[in-house]
Amino acid sequence: MICHIDANNGIPIYEQIERQVKFAVANGSLLAGERVPSVRELATQTAVNVNTVARAYRRLQNDGILRTIRGTGMAVANDAEERCRQEREQLIRKRLRSVLQEALNSQMSLDEIRRLVDAECSTLSTAQTQPP
Image (cartoon, rainbow, N blue to C red):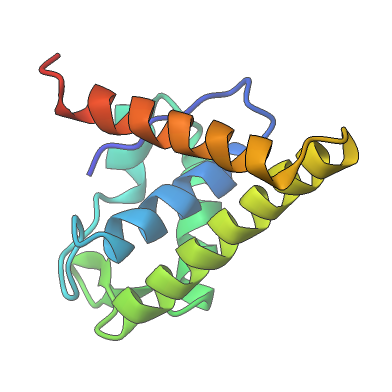
């Protein structure tokens, strides 16, 4: 599991780690029972302070996404996948709603918004099928 941290995007680093773990669980990249890197390992991989990673893991534990395995570290909880899928959808829905509200507030019509969304989805779809 590799996290991509962007210190300049306005989202706290611990929250970026949380989101990426939850998204990885939601999309099946991290499976129930699978171990996650130790706090120190992830801090080293991402060049992030150990306390920041520990905070993210603690919050993930409190949310029931990670569980402690005595003597071996932390792993994805057995029932985390559905919870992560729901949370991912809520987060994306909230961000979409904000963007759509901004478009409506700027007097864009629903047809203009739909065309814009369709064009962007098409662009993203094309970009994902292109080899790097």
